Image (cartoon, rainbow, N blue to C red):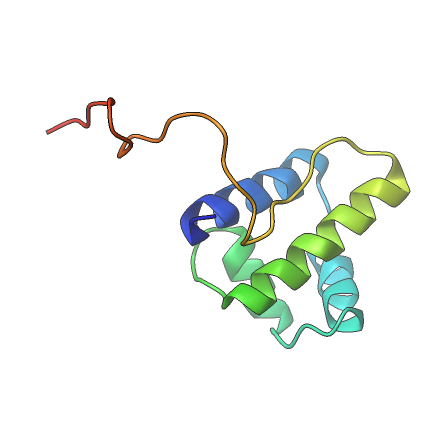
Length: 96
């Protein structure tokens, strides 16, 4: 999955459910993540990028949190496939 798409979709799940970023950061660390709490806050707001390992560890933390709380929605992993056409896919037009 494109890292920008992964970031946008993960951020959307976090925002949609009003997930606590401090708690997600703790869960991220418990799963082996190394990013700081501020890195997680910036990433979820779309202000900075994270390496694939950190993005996937955060996605795992988000998904485990949502699953435990019975919330719908899943944060994608870097190896996830996006369904549906993208604006740069063959057969679609891009604004010029």
